[in-house]
Length: 249
Ligand SMILES: [Zn+2]
Image (cartoon, rainbow, N blue to C red):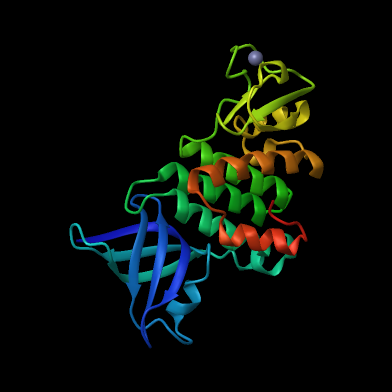
């Protein structure tokens, strides 16, 4: 059957001397993996196959087949400028790998598609800091996967979380009061809790700018949830960390 959709390119690999395989996050069919014939080299097709470029694609897929065949591809929105800015260039592989890890192939993922579109749009307009956009994307991707816990109430006593500081219980993967915490965990400042609550409530351009130290706390929580779920760290994220001269404990 032939299908058409708007999509973002998440991965491109060499298949043969002339052909590539690409993974697309489509608006209607989730992640689609398709052979792109004759795309290697300086063809128009190759130009459209840059990571996170938004494209209109038409593909052929037999029922139950894992691999589709790309028929048409046309750029609808270039995100090339993001690869030219240092603060966003390294986020591109990280975003792509995150979506590929968390979205099961061929399952509709319209909310995930809208999330990526929303974050890229904000980055293209430079209406938001890259670090805030990255935290927004990772928290929301975990939330859409059913992994990000409630951020306003303590998971143990169900009362609202404290305004000054709370704990993220890494074993239970939930936010708790310091006094209710029993297992190992991370300290989460009241400011980080407030940012998390707004991230999950407001669109990116409506968020207040946040300090790096607070965004780092949000990043640590997201990273803990992601690593526990996947059982490993994302390659692109580990690379980001080495560039920031941080080491993974
Ligand atoms: Zn409590």
